[in-house]
Structure formats: structure tokens, C-alpha cells
Image 1 (cartoon, helix red, strand yellow):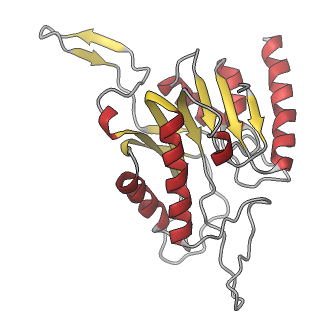
Image 2: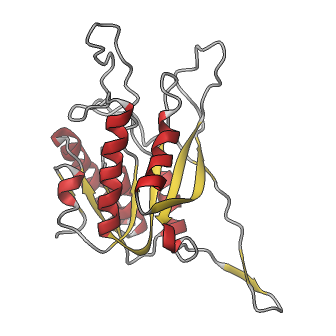
Length: 257
């Protein structure tokens, strides 16, 4: 299968055709579109043009479990999944249910939880009793039997007299912009600076990274800038076309420098 390409299809289809992926970095739809007040309880705000972001909790969890079972088939031994999730003020519990069910129903466990601190948040909270959220979570998943062996790019700082290796401190707190700038087609984009920092922590230069929800191409841009190979899936044709334009520009800029 061709690498350094975004495939305009459902990720479950792509994952039937790929293998030996070193790491998975992605931000799925959060299922946070608000329910409307109509009798059919339709979504009042639609975030995506090709994805139902208004599933029931049960539907969303089942969908996520199917994806993680496919991750298990394509991810190399000792590879990691870096999974960015958040929650909405209307549905504060779903993220935690999803993480729990992944650990209950699949071969994966949370090895670390990284806090992504943003410089700003918009809009400000209008809730009288809830905090304004300026952070999101990146869950580091590994296979349960690889909790002590999954790969990370930690540098050795010293060798103790006992023979034990000591490593430099790497904190589970990353500050990065909200996104790479606003655009007209996707209002929930990723931050390439965040992705670059994650790549430096968990991915080697000759690796292949897979993003199952490529969106507007942010993971691809970060991989190009870090000289790492990627494969992406994205069901929205508009997003893929937009991503390819970004990728072409990033490749030109990389060649200049």
C-alpha cells in the first residue's frame, strides 16, 4: 500500500489493507454535537460533513471498540496509540466510559495520560458551575502484555552503580496551540506542534505513522516536518482535497529548508 498518502475512505476499510504500523496518532470525532430540542432529538450543531457525531453512548462505544480491534491487527509489536479525546459540557461522562471500555473489551491498556494545555479557549464558559476547559487529553495506549516494553524515545541521563539506567525527565504535560489556524470547512482541527512533540517522544525517523481520522491533514503535516512517513484515512472528500493542498505546500517548504 502506498505510504505518505491520505485515503478517502472509512478507516476500517484502510486497516484491512495495511500492516506493520509503528505508531497511531489520531483525534477521532468526540461525539459532542449537541442534541436538538425537536421530537426526533436531532443534532442542533453538525461538526462534520460525512460523520454522525451525534451517536448514542452505546453506538459510539461500539464504533470505537471496532476501531481499536483493527488497530490491534495493524500495529507492530510494542507500538503505541496516541489517542486525543475530550468531552462536552452536555456529555461529560462519555470520554471516561470509552477509555474504560477500550481497556475492558480490547487488547489495549492506558500506559500514560498526557495533558495538552492550550494557550486560549473559545468561547468562554457560560456555565454557572463548570470550569472553562483549557486542556485536552492524549491517552497513550499500548497492548496489555507490552506495558513494560512499548517503545519511547527517552534519553539516558546516567547509569547507576547498581547498573540501573536513569532517564531524563519527560513530563506528561505539553503546551501547544489550539490548532494550525482556522479554516472554513473544519472547526475542530488538530495542532501540528502538538503532533510534532508527540512524534519526538514516541516515533523513530524511519517509522510509519497512521492517522485513522486525518481531518484536514495535520498529522501528515507534522510527519513531513519531522521527516516521518505517514498513512491517513479520511471519509470526507472535502477534507482530503484541503489536506492535499496543505501537504503540497508543506513539501515545497521542506525542500526550501
